[in-house]
Image (cartoon, rainbow, N blue to C red; front, side):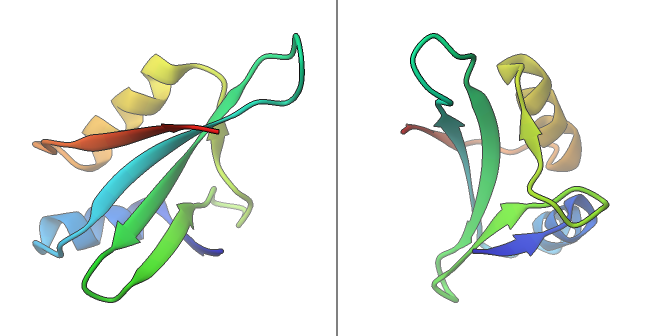
Amino acid sequence: MQGISAQELAFAYRTGERLEVQVVERSEGEGQRSSWEVVVVFPDKEKSFVLQSVRGTKRTWRDFVRMMNFIRDTCPGIRQILINFV
């Protein structure tokens, strides 16, 4: 899956681009702490992107609240976030 930076996500959101923000829980294994990642879907273009860090790697969070705060700061006024448990 291709990546999108936080700046690109913020720009797309501010310009009114139709997008869906999904957060996905990834379990590392039995008894292991899970991590969260953000997937951005552009329904009109039928494309999905995973949020990348500045270094170009997939950005993940161990703390759900911090991840949600990041999304709210990046996309102020967002009304819906889909949560997927894998």
